[in-house]
Amino acid sequence: MLARRYLKSRRDERFVSLIGWSSAVGVAIGVAALIIVMSVMYGFDAELKNKILGFSSHVDIQGSDETLGDWQGWLETAEHIDGVAKAAPYMTAQVLANHGRYSTGAILKGVDVNREKNIANHVISGRFVSDSKTSPYEVVIGKDLAHKLRVTVGSSLRLISPAGGISPAGMAPRMRAFRVVGIFDSGFYEYDVGLIIAPLLGVQRLNRTGDRVSGIELHLYDRDQAGVVAARARMQLPADAWVTDWMHRHRSFFQALKMERLVMGIILSLIVIVAVFNMVSSLVMVVMERRKEIAILKTVGATHASVMRIFLMMGTLLCGLGTLLGASFGLLLAWKLDALLSWFEQVTGITILSGDVYFIEHVPSVIDPVSVTWIVVISLLMGVLATFYPAWRAANVPPADALRYE
Image: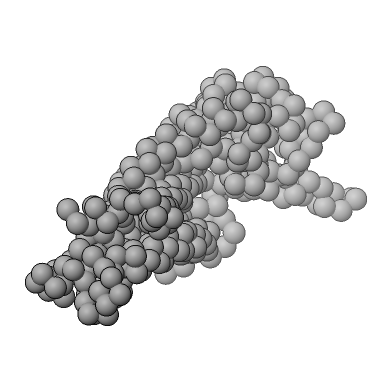
């Protein structure tokens, strides 16, 4: 009761009360900002993993040479490794894609059509490529690449590969016309602007590699077990097999995201720290203003511990209220953030995220319960610990000195 009463302002103490309540608002802003930013960072991490792994393997197997000849035996072995959902051969090549007066470099990936059905789920126009034996010269391309080359479903796309033969004039690049049968949207700009999917046989014929492939890609039941499955593959495949998992291939990228999340958390924590110090200042001012009342309490039998509890309760009320409001607002905003920013983009015409810079074109948000819990607990703990000093000051007010001139 006394703690709540001291938080209410008298006419001559409104400034002190204002500082106290503003510190609670500062805590709320800091907690909300931490929850929102951490949710966005976790969202970026999850979204980028989904986008990257939607078009690439969890584990990749290659040989010591540029291409793999006796891959059928390796494929059969890989399919029986514990944790592998499916295995498929692939062939990649750097090509120059040309349509009319438009040209650009791209990665051509040949896939076993019967084993790569998941890519078909991303086709937004047309269809996926047919079985390689009947229609080897069909391709599906990313939506941004299609826009860049001004192609649509049914267009003829000329692909030029540097892996050509020797002519009297020197090295002659290989070229062949492929028909665009579909356009895909992976949601990942790097794929949408630079990847072309074709049947495995068509890419092998373009590069004149015969039945050889670039490697074998494995898709797992649990992508987080990629390191374990890669270790099993190294043990069961021949010694010249070069096995890498997605965690290793994109390690630098995701480590950078993790570091950015840590740095942002530290920076935004300063908001909470500043608010807590403001709260300490306001409580110290309350102690100075309430010296007479504290002295009276002590003369009628209040102990040091009971006086400390009053001011500890004041700090806990302020910090608890700020944390509760901040957590509620932060969770609500993190939950509806993508919808709010989409509405903002439609109203203002301003693009928040550009796909060619951030790889994705919307703001993902994933609320992590563990992170939210830690933010709330640490904010409350900081507030309670910071309150000890003004509480100690209040408990040590000498009654005789405080009442001497009253």
